[in-house]
Length: 191
Image (cartoon, rainbow, N blue to C red):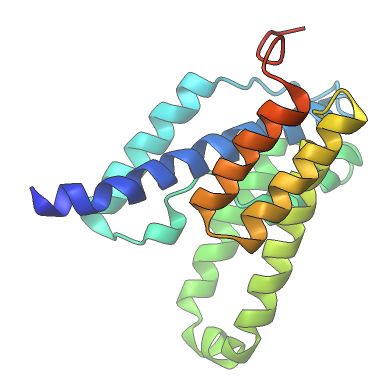
């Protein structure tokens, strides 16, 4: 029982990351859909939850590797979507692009241990670039949400608080700032 209690915060963080990945992926896909009316993409979040749950269950038994338990690698998703937006000549189908990246590209790297060992010194730089691209994309999506300059400033201050302070202090400061500067009335209603 002690293990479950200790793992509970990690499970909550994992769910928050999963939720953010689904929102980010759907937002990126919705913005890219306008460029490709010839390749309709159906986004079904319930189906996404089921497929992620089945994959994570299988991986927990066969090869537990926590860093692959999320649903979206933002950097790769942006690269695939940008290429998909260029038209059928560049990428006939979005699913073909995703499959070629995840099913064919990444597993082949695992088979090439000498290649992975050779580029190991570059791993920190590639992780930095991946995180920087993810931060840029998430920030650009987040800054589309505010409806006024006060909300935009509050969003920026919350981001700074999360980056500089421990997460619980950043979230608490964000809630206080949102309540004091923007107020609560009407902000949770859909337009």
